[in-house]
Length: 169
Image (cartoon, rainbow, N blue to C red):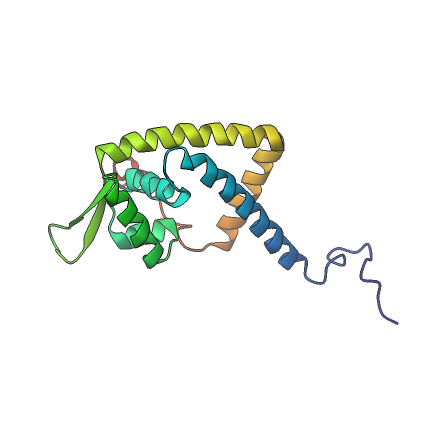
């Protein structure tokens, strides 16, 4: 006799409960990304540009490889994003002094000013999310996803994003 697929046991509600989690998280990510994209369009920016500007400021002129690792972005997407930041004079690339084949990326003064405005927009967007979700639910979601990300590891999970001068030597 076949078991009831809607039984009360753990994991029995879905054939693949972790797959359901992935779908739910993917849906949530799409909704959050859309809201953030709409909010950042006010500044003529994108979530990827915001992410790269934040990383540039924290890492203090990383190489493209370090930037790729910290952002988790594919090289082609990263290059397009950095190109867009260069086109708006928010970032620029320079070869390193010791190896001219290695390229470092720098945030410009204009990029720093844009980042300040972006942070204000993001803070307002976050306040709106907290109102819709509830502060406790928002905090619980953040803690659960951070814990899962640390447990699962992955690109950038062990990367110290503190500015170089703040890191232990």
